[in-house]
Image (cartoon, rainbow, N blue to C red; front, side, top):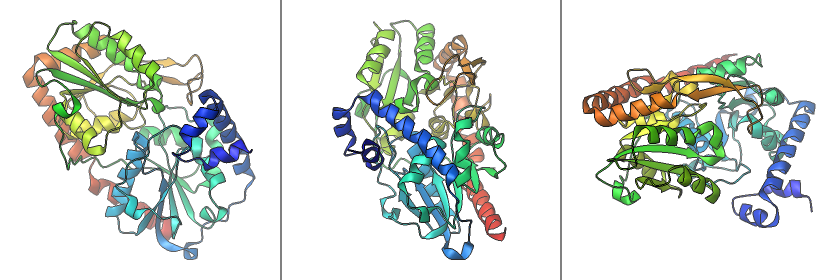
Length: 419
């Protein structure tokens, strides 16, 4: 049996079956090897250049728009922006390899199984772009204008991903932090198109729906394990909370984790042993539930070591929920000291490979003492709390709005066609 072929064809239905047959680490190793092999194949192809008249004017959005992850939400935000633009568009669902839930159905009516238009907007990060190339027919890539929509979290863009530029005509990113990183490695146009953030809650859920107490001041830490626990740095939030508050207090810490393992949850619980005011949420939530959770807590905390954008933080600010966050990487482009509690950091060098992040790269180590100070300030000073909430909401409405994103996209597409 060709295991590589099975892995390429795998869908969410087959993942549990494969995990019963093969150890998880073995599957990860096989996926890494497939990715490395795909880069070699990319460099050997001769892609036929863009020919505008070959297909209809418009945009094929290609990505995992059904994923219950930050990357899936990113793809949906891009789709929302295309909906407001002047060109027709369609969506091609790309199922990523890996253990993730794909239950979001909001754009199902736009998903089709072909690419009718002459611009591909490929919302697939470079570490999987080679696999996507192997899965898709060559006609998907030839004679079209291919744009990669990429997220990345560090200032150093990996050399191993450079072959991906061979498939593309340009790159879009949601932050200048990412764009600067990519521009160091390519002469292709790299365009920054910030997300629009306007959070809608069609069905609102209350604290009781999440089995959360009504009488406590709640801090929320939220992350997806597949986005790398070390990068999201939950241990720093636990440490800051313990420094800020004793075991008996009128606050609580909510820990929302997607794709959480029993081992990871056990380790976090041990860190907070004897704290009775810690609440874990590990089931997959729909968007209304996620937005309601962010709205019904009092503060969102992210002591990340690096962020590709920080959508949860922007959404919290939009909902008027104050944010405590590390003052480094992409989130600083929509945060100021007047709109968020920005935590100082030390930039440190990675001493070993950490997933996609290589030894010698750099990321932030946030100041836990300062984070604890901000926790106490927001809890103890209602006037400070209200000021931050009001200013954050107004800032996001001005800084990350739909009109801005649509204008940038329309202008860029016009330029592509003129060129």
